[in-house]
Length: 247
Image (cartoon, rainbow, N blue to C red; front, side, top):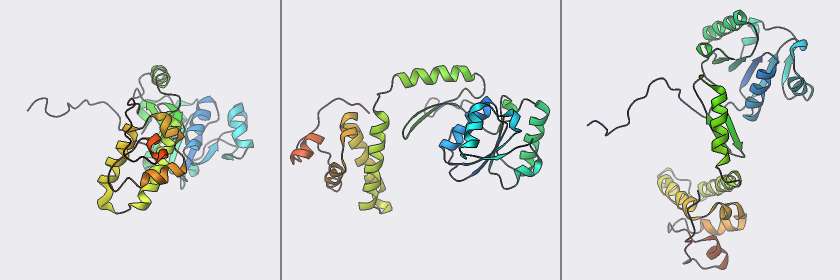
């Protein structure tokens, strides 16, 4: 039986895409680390509150405050700041205060990240590559953030420059497909057909796909076929794309 199933490698983290849209995120601190945390959660459409004395704000955090991208409380953290909060990100240069914040979060069962203190983190921030809808995270589980950054840049440098746009077009096509084939029992067929599109069309084809192309292509869902983009536009449903596999 050995080797039939994946070996268990303990010590890892469960890497998830955490949906925090419209969730209340409290950022404690206003320095460089806090600035990075703020960008991360704003990009995920969270509602962000920053607590820090104005003297502790760096230029970037001050800009977020001035632009009203975040709510701002001009003082040091108080326990009442945790009321009705969904997530806490602490980035203050005070180990005792950081530990106290984490203990309060544990009591209230609020997930928290205490910057630069891995044992006091319910989750970690990895090094992120973003290209439109594409997000790739590299995590070292708190062991080497700089190495995570190096690995992330190495991965990003090997990605096609248009992959983000291609993914965006595929997402639109997928949503259109769900409208014409919404039944749960059609789920496996939807996945198989979308896989064919991604495998048989090049990234350039996916990027060039127009709304009209999508409507025409959806006509081939029921028979389960995928003509090439050229054949689709020429009205030749028997045309078969024989280009390279690119996605």
